[in-house]
Length: 120
Image 1 (cartoon, rainbow, N blue to C red):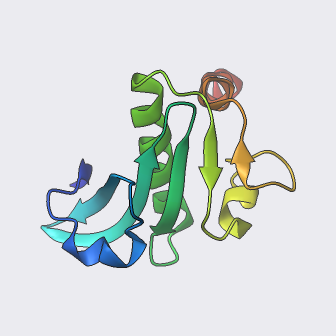
Image 2 (image 1 turned 180 degrees about the vertical axis):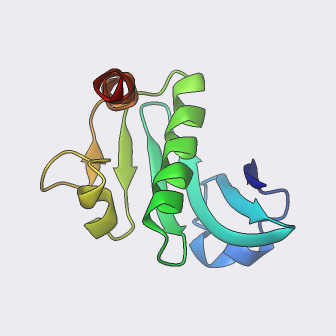
């Protein structure tokens, strides 16, 4: 069973450390093995994503990023800035066109409700 959980050990993500920034990470775990992750930080007005890797699995990448965005929403944050490559983000429509920003996380997440209705 696949789970995306908050990482307890940030040691593997030390390369992303920035003075004065409290890093967080989520890891995708399948059968006890990490098969993807995202490293991010919360700020007053946005969540900043420094890295995301799903080893080429686009659906997993989508799930990992959406987990980060959902966690930000729970903190009342409605904007995301991506400092990682945006090719996959653009393909998945997880950022505004031709930018490295998601200006409205709530709108992005609410768009998923419309997808379910279209399938019915």
